[in-house]
Every structure is written in structure tokens, then in C-alpha cells.
Length: 321
Ligand SMILES: [Zn+2]
Image (cartoon, rainbow, N blue to C red; front, side, top):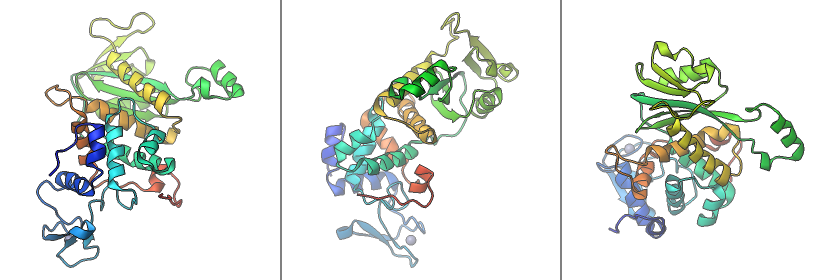
């Protein structure tokens, strides 16, 4: 069996062979041997000529492929292109646009966009549990870039107050650990604090800026505030970890993604969080590109995403090229 790829260039060659695609995916989906997605039976036979399995138990849909029940289901796009797109998205620090992936795979931009949205779904954080220890919380405004706007709109927006025409992302990061990011409707106390209570252990140390919405956290947390009008760091009181995450995110959104509709924003947040949360292993050692890709692949099983779910347009059919 061919050695698994370590670089983008090796991935292009390796996944150019359909047998390699199948072996790579099957080893991760069924580490203990192939089982039928429908009845879980391990009594299955491989039909080599068609790259599918036949379940020996009698029931409907007794034939299945590696795509069955995954984000690849119902897609006519080859696994070589899916896996190449996944490699790029899992590893490009600032993300990749559907235009770049379209050029690399030869698939239309529209089909590529849909493919990338499915991959982002697979990247959604699957871990439960709450953040603890030292946790920084912060919010940021996203969108409404002045240089992309029509002149009339620019005048209107720029003279307006800060958050006008912008979306709000809220983030929490455990220092030395994982980040969680959300698209929120507003920065009011109720929205921000209910998110904190859901995702941060009571008793943890919370660091935030002086936004009034964070007042009152003292009852459950050790809350320290940095007043950004005065200083950015005071001992260990700062939100620099979260701010570094925002700058990475914005480099991606501003440079690579032409425009992101508010409805889709959370998927880009998930994508950036996936790369951030998988930059190191539990011992603090940096993960390689192939490790990160492997993790993304392991998250595909059992996830499906329809065109309607991606676009919010129920009833509209996707055209696959
Ligand atoms: Zn079966």
C-alpha cells in the first residue's frame, strides 16, 4: 500500500488513485472492519469492480459505498477532488476561497462552494464539556468593509456608529486550550452572559474588556477586566489570545473570502476554530498538515448536509458539474 501523504503535493498524487482514496477513508471510518451503515452487520462483501460493499443481510439499500451516510453522499464529485479540497481547507492558515479550490480541482465555483460548506460542517467542534482555568472572552464586528462598498453606502455606514451594518462574533478561549466562537445577534448582557454560562465552568477565571454587558459575572466567576482605554495588558489581565484569533479570522475573511453572508458566517467561524483548535496535540506538540487532515476526515462520518440546509433555500436543487 502507498505511504500516506505528508504535503499538498503528495496528497494530489496519492488521492489521484481511487484505491488510495478508498483505503484512506475506510481505515478511518471503520477502524475495526467494514460494517453495513444500515444494519451494522460486519457480514459484508466488497465488490471490487464497482468499489462498493454488499451487505449479506436481507434489507433495502443493502449496497453501500464509502460515500453513504457521509458529507460526500449524493455528490457526483470524485473523492480525489473532495479530499484535495479538504486538505486545503484543513491546512491553509487563512482559509481558502471557493475560487482557489475551483482552480485547483477544475470543478465549477458554485459546486466548489457547496463542497466547502459541507467540509466546514464536518469541521464543527465535536467535543463537549466546558472551558475552564483562565478563559478570555471577547466580541468583534465583522463585515461591511468600506473599500468594497458603493460610495453612497460608504458615506452612510462610515458616519454611523461602530457596529452598524456589521455582524457580531463572540469568542471564548481557554488559555493554552481551545477556542469557541459564535455568531450572536447583539452584545447585550443576556446574549453574552448566557453563552458564557453555557460554555465556561463556574469558578473559572474570566478576562474581558470593560464592556458593560460583562458586569455581574462576579457571582459565578473570578472576573478581571482590562480597560482598553487605558492599557492592553496588566499582568495576566488581557484578552490578547482572543484578539490574535480575531486577527487570523479577519485575515481570512478579508483577504480570501470575497463576501460572507450573515447566514453563513458561523461556518467560517467553525472552520477557523477547527484549524486553531487542532494546531497542537494534547502534549502541546504541533500537529502536521497530515494529522490535521486526518482529524477532519474522521469527522465526516455520519454527517450529511443538503443544499437546502446550506443555502436556507428549501426546494432549490443543486446542479453538480
Ligand atoms: Zn446491512
